[in-house]
Length: 385
Image (cartoon, rainbow, N blue to C red; front, side, top):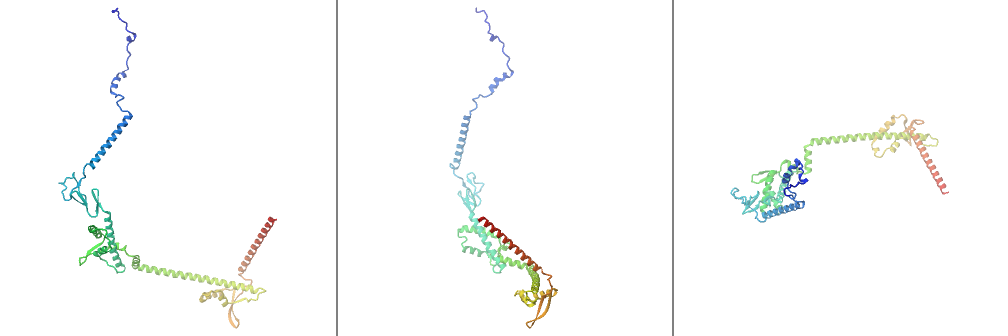
């Protein structure tokens, strides 16, 4: 029975299937690709990042504390030591405007310490500017008074200005060393701003420049000097203005005189015309003529009676008027010149016509008012009934 061969099952006798050529490389790819557990998860990545940040912060803090607390600050190198021979790693170089001795920094006058530097002191700088302005004002005002009124001086002694400053207590807030420093800086600034010379006695004197002195002159002085410099133009302009004003005044007076003469002439004509019309009426007892002197005194103002030329011009116009007759007449034993309107029916009754028209309009207005009042009263009566 052992020799009888066993039949292979059908599953074993089946021929194997042909594999895809692309699937032949799958074992190699599986070896090259990292497993899925190689990369950390999202929670593990956040924990790792947090630990790195904490480690960096601790390292930076330890470095800062070791640098600023664990070690002593560097001292300053002495100012008189050679920079080549000195060890710059063990000391700080001495800053500008400062003196260093035994590792300590002492800033010069006018400068104050800020860290490892010496910066300019603002109070000292402001005091220097005030001092320079004080010098400028005293010297320039003295020169300006000399130019304007001749009471000042052109060159001002420098010692006199310093004495005024001492007496006025300008530098009381500074000690002697600070005062010397401010004075030295002010002298340098003044030498650049003002002119300086040394007189025969060896005293320094100061003078204000011309352009700067002009700004210190009083306003009245500037006006006077400008008038003196332009006296020809100013005088000719004033003369021209006065002449123009006089001519304008003369023209205005002539126009007023002419208009007044014409006005008086019109009044005379109107008066004579009305008098002639009135005298021609049946119930009138007035004379048709008018005494010229009485008419003159009636029409002229009191101040106009002093000017005989005004009425003379009116008489000239009356003489040229053919409607008016002029003749002498004895009145109460005295010979008078009378004027009489000689135009019958009046060639110039426009004034009377206008007066009649005005009276007619007034009468019409009054009648209309009466009618309106009657209508109003009637309506009231009707409403009450």
